[in-house]
Structure formats: C-alpha cells, structure tokens
Image (cartoon, rainbow, N blue to C red; front, side, top):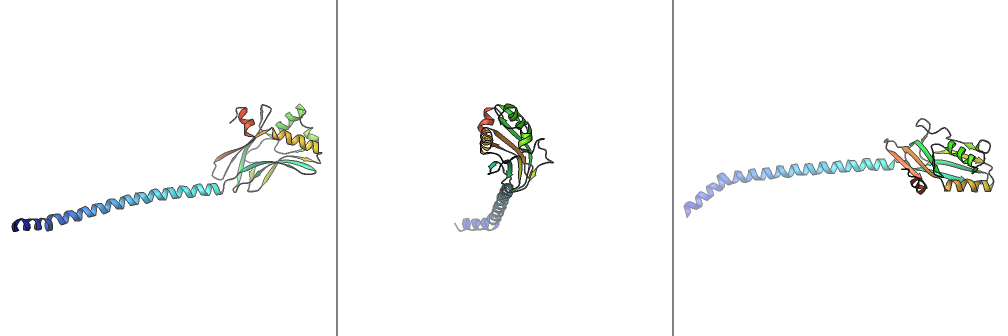
Length: 195
C-alpha cells in the first residue's frame, strides 16, 4: 500500500501539477477572450446609442402653421425641431389633385372660385417650387408660403376651411442627410393613394 501511495504522490507532483497549471492557464485565456468580446459588443452598442442620441437631439421637425391675426393670415413652415433642415419639397393635396408648389395650388383655387385672385390680394411665397439651394431652415426659423394682409374675417374663415381640407407633405433632410417626411391631414393624402 505504501508503494501505491508513493506512486500516486509522484504522479501528482510530476504529472498532475503541470496539467492543472496548463488547464488553469487555458481557462484564464478563454475567460479573457470572452470578456474582451463582450466588452467590444458593449462598446459597439454604446457607440450606436450615442450616435442615435446625437441624431435625435439634432433632429429637425417641420410644422405647417396657419396663423390668423386681426389684420392678416399667414401660412408658413416652421422648424420646431432642434437641428437645421433643408426642405426638398412641399406638396399640397386638395380635391383629388396633387400640387408641387404653392403657386400652382393657389391658381387652382382661384380658377375654381375657392379663393380670391391671389395676384391682387396676397403675397405669395414659394411659388416657383423649392430646391435645396433655396430653403435651409434653422431651429425656430419660419418660411412663409402665403400672407394675406388686412383680410376680412370671412376671408380668413374661407382660407382656414380650405387648409383644413388640404393635405400637405413636407420632405426634408437633416444634418446627417437622412430624409424625413412630415404629413398634415394624412387621411386626405392616403385616400388619394399617395405615400
């Protein structure tokens, strides 16, 4: 029995200890590699989240407003977001038709008798369409589409009713060249089959 004990002791000293050391070293290496991979994934996720946060904190947001004051009515686009935007297009949808700019829309309304002659009674902006070179809106900046001076109340009411039944789609890009669309009265636009 003593001989068996000595053989086992020699095996543990000579053979087993180096094997255990090797096994422990390999386990440490595997844990180290796995931890590094996990940290890289965490770093990628954190970086992606920071980039998305930066994009959202600098995102523009276009708003279409019709302001009715005592002596004028003004229709304008305003950037109510945090970052600048470049307007690519403003489309109007009314009575089953699409109009690529304010001037064509106002001519159509005048011909139908829905609107007074815009040449004499209003200041028309954005009449020739919108290009990237023409319309960059910073935060809280507005761009008028139409301004009516000294409009009687009935006229203001008529204009308000027209724009309540008009769909409007504003397409713009942000600092990161991401394209966004903002639609007003979406049911009118989608009913006509436009996306």
